[in-house]
Image (cartoon, rainbow, N blue to C red):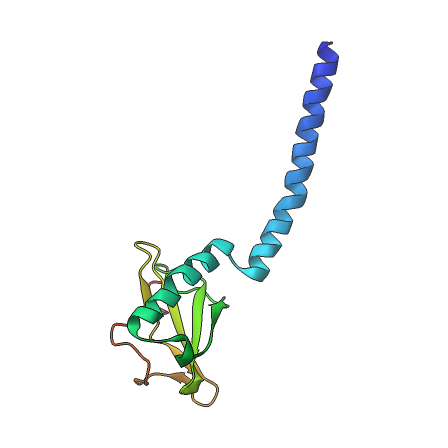
Amino acid sequence: MKILKDRKTLMIIVILMLIIVFLLPVAVIFRLNYGSPYQDYLLNKHVPPYLEKTGYADEDILEQHTGYPNESSNKDYFHTQYIVKFKDEPDITYYYGVRKKGKIVKQFCERYSPKYRNISGPTKHSEDDCVNYYDNK
């Protein structure tokens, strides 16, 4: 009877080890390819209401979605960003982030346009209290 119990315990341990060995790489590959589902959820929860509160309606926005930068960003904010293009400035991409502490939404000062590359001056939808993406790396 004791041998049978030990064999069951050993089988359970082996099965758990195999599950861990196979699921861990799958989870890592998923995270690398699709980002963090938790961060996606947070950005989709906080940024659209922020944009609405700021005075933008769905009709003003051409495109909005989460995105994953290739390089590390400001450590105070989640790595996943919210990307917005407005209808009246379709060539300029704006980036928003959610602060880890307090879940506060801020626009990143860095904007991108294929025409002008990185834009440093003010634009129509740039915010005065924006946060630098490259600070606090």
